Length: 408
Image 1 (spheres, rainbow, N blue to C red):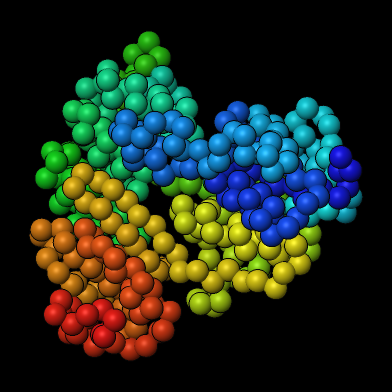
Image 2 (tube, rainbow, N blue to C red):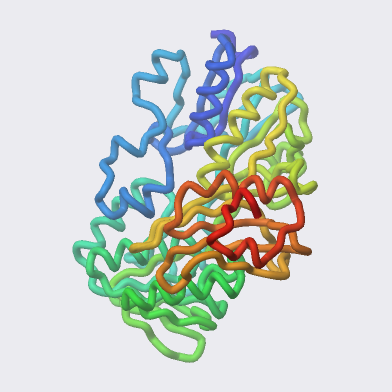
């Protein structure tokens, strides 16, 4: 293989795999290398805190492609391999074994890593994070042995693991520094729905608390100490306080970085031959007129398709409305849109919130910024249309279930 003509993807998750798939589908026949630090071939992460964690999905279902797909499409997989440096001027990568690899075009799909909790005891046995399938496997084993789990952080990962643990019969205490779960993402009105949901499933929710240390005995977790001196007993602790984009390589290579690798609408970075997609990319979005970074499955699924086409010289822009979903207990939810904290002035509910069958809309100046359907299905298309159109709507009609969403 002539490596100097290679298209190289750094990052072996969903985003990297979908980029490789698109490059081949769009007719690229040159050398194609996909480098991943994990020993596993590319897999999807949502099941790790949902169906796979609960034992409802087997391992083979999490993979993006069957193993033979990579051979059939002549994609060279370099797994268990880390890129240690990028030299944009030489178009060269340095790998952790000391070898180098030249590229013509480079795509960064390096994802994000869980934020660490810098407190005493954080390295004790029994302290867990969730990002990889191996970590999900350890949590599954934990559910069979632990009686008391403490979850630090009431974000999506923390709440989904909490729901899985409760389904397995494990007692769970959730510790959150803010007043409600998911407060920065959903705002007070809708965050309360998730607080009520978990309380209904006997989760001990403690808000407005600060974790001071993790206590242990003989190197193993026994509890979590709060700033007020309270100790919450625990057989295990899950830290879920968000994720940080893996931008170290990009920064060292001199790319523009600000909470992610900054890209234009085509996912091209500040270097003409380097692109970024997925959790690591902070991309200019034509609908919102600003650069945004979205840490969700749909972004990792769809954004690399645009990046791959741009790598081949096509005139493309990524303009999809952000989408994510969650499953917790009897609640199934889809969310479309983008709202920054305090970026809305009204929430409109359509349906019955108490019975968990409703759609919530976030509005600003009468325009729909986002919509979340809870146990109400087949409404994502009209929700998306309301967001994209940016038209002013009548809140009363938006709330009226007798008015079809397409006619609001």
